Image 1 (cartoon, rainbow, N blue to C red):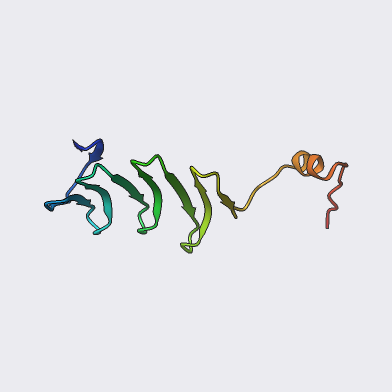
Image 2 (tube, helix red, strand yellow):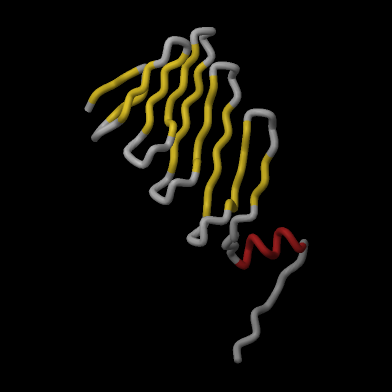
Length: 109
């Protein structure tokens, strides 16, 4: 394992250096790190299917996402406070009763 610019690299990566910027691409060609000569940098992480699951930059912005089996984004949260949550939630009977404000009874068939 190698560490470059605070990123742990394991495996084979392509490093591209330009006169004004620096880029690291993962084995799938996704840009996981970028830095320019003005000091701006950004980091990205991807899941096995190539969906971007994390982003962070030198301006203190970050965002994270989750995807379902069909590659539909089901969760998003960022440092600006935006949250989109479409995940399926599993609740106990007690949690449902608390949300409803009264007791429920499940009928058997």
